[in-house]
Image 1 (cartoon, helix red, strand yellow):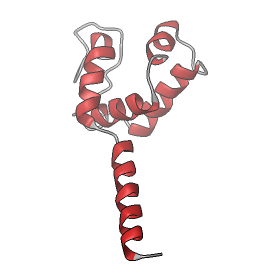
Image 2: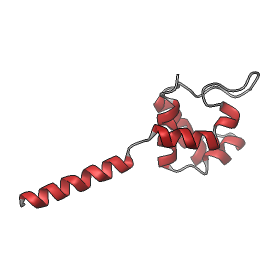
Image 3: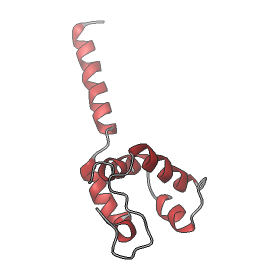
Image 4: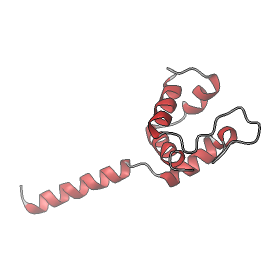
Length: 101
């Protein structure tokens, strides 16, 4: 393989990998649109029955959101909300919430 072909291949792979990376900034926006009304951005409202998501374990959040989306974890409210989320949305939301303290 020629060096230029190898460089082009590597640049393409890096661009693909970076496009798949989770963005806490996109997650903050999506969380504001989808999650914050019940769970808050950093803390839910006083007296809210919904748990805070800020600072939660990333693997737990990702697993829970995918289970709600796929309806293997049942909550009518969360199944409907998470049902609209793509894998990218979930990764972004998890990236935001798991890094907020």
